[in-house]
Image 1 (cartoon, rainbow, N blue to C red):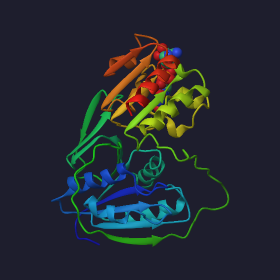
Image 2 (tube, rainbow, N blue to C red):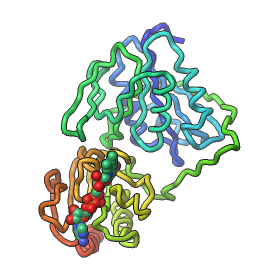
Image 3 (spheres, helix red, strand yellow):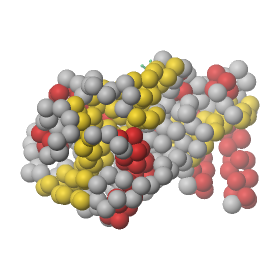
Amino acid sequence: MSESRLYTYVLIGQTETGLSDASQNLMRLIAAAYAGLNASVEVIIVGRNDIPNRDSLDLCGIKKMTHLKSGSTLPDSPGFKGALLELFSHDGIVHIYALNDAHMTGLTASLAAARQWPMFANCTKIENIKNITRPVFGGKIDELRNVSSVSCVITVRPGKEIVDANPVETELKTIELVDTLSGEYKVTLQKNAGKKNVSDASIVISGGRGMKSAENFSALFKLAEIVDGAVGASRPVVDSGWLTHEHQVGQTGSTISPNLYIACGISGSVQHVAGMSTAKCIVAINADKDAPIFSIADYGIVGDVLEILPQLTTEIEILK
Ligand code: FAD
């Protein structure tokens, strides 16, 4: 163990295809923020698969990496949590970072609760340990945090901008965990089979109650496929069972910052906007010209989304 007083960990959840761009960006971000500090920085990859893109790890700027492997697909299974808590047992200050995505929120919250450390969720900027930015009040105000003297868990909003790489040769160690999941309960992971998820995509096309029915979402999936994007949703869409929760964007869903966000039949409630207001470009299609979503949109189209979407899709198909 290093002699430094500050112990920093970046928790990375494996996806089926390896490590997401957002995960790689997080590692690069933390490497840059902790460069020059007397801190030990380590990446912990949790998941059961081998790491396919091993060489890409060298581009993340963090030398020490551990792969915690278990038979479970769930990062918040008891085996992972117990092993992580053991790793985090230090006398000094411990900082734990993870992406603020559906994959890691359960695990990070339970780690913070187990250690009774504060948790700063959904941060947007990690300049250095004295300057961590977290939007509050539905994104209306940025709170600046100095975490230099406190052990804490920090989750970071997945970013699409590629952070500059600082290559180092990584030392990857693997720890195989004995699976401690008992047969007493069974958890099913809902998968977005073969499709991009909202946290990873740089284009997200979201539908709200204005889409009227589950069947009408096929128009969103069609457009998403053409532009290599993902389909998002407002909460009523998920509550109605039209799409699963992994599609939900907002306060109780995913918080995302894609390059382009197209809101279709979404009114723009504070809870929804909290999850997508940092998108680079926002396009809104809504029948009501006074819908709040237009106040944050870069481009607005007033009209029936069920008529506009097929026309938009045809035009984009022609351009491609
Ligand atoms: P509505 O507000 O009903 O808006 C539908 C919109 O569609 C309207 O603006 C209407 O003009 C438009 N429309 C109707 N027909 C058409 C048409 N044919 N063409 C074009 N436009 C049309 N919500 C989230 O989204 N994400 C969250 O994470 C979330 N978390 C929440 C947490 C809490 C604690 C609470 C209390 C609420 C939360 N909500 C969340 C719910 C939120 O308050 C809103 O109710 C929700 O965002 C509204 O969804 P919507 O815009 O799809 O529906």
